[in-house]
Image 1 (cartoon, rainbow, N blue to C red):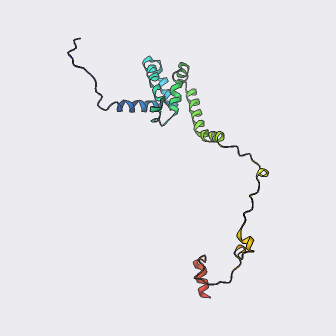
Image 2: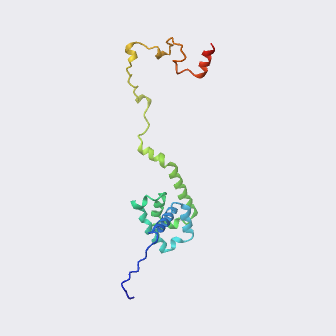
Image 3: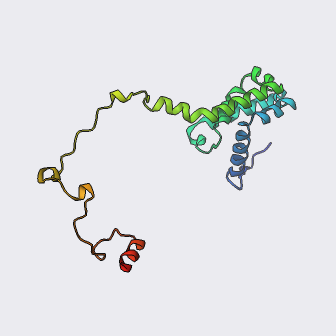
Length: 175
């Protein structure tokens, strides 16, 4: 082929955005064990080009790409799909159900199990708690206060008492 000084360079009209979105959507589908079972049943895993594509998709594990993934289990299953034994096992419905159950139990218990490792154990008994130290009050030094015991100080003015409800005000006005 003769080169006339003209470079034939393909210019992607959307700068790879469509490819990025398609690969992102596909890799997130791998978080679904039923979809992996579908791929195994339809013999996608027998195609070496598809296996190379799965190997190529491992770049999604890098930090600059992982931030776009909403279903992190897809990366776990992508790693498992690199193993031919796992690919063959996912063709059987029992293995699909097992993977689905394990994924469900992980979602169900992950937060509680994680909190067990983060938070200190709550096995303290009541004997280990010391009573709080007494708070010194000004009223103890000055003598006992009548407010402390709920004793009326002798004022019956409705205008000054802001704590009286509307029902009590009506009763007092009638008396």
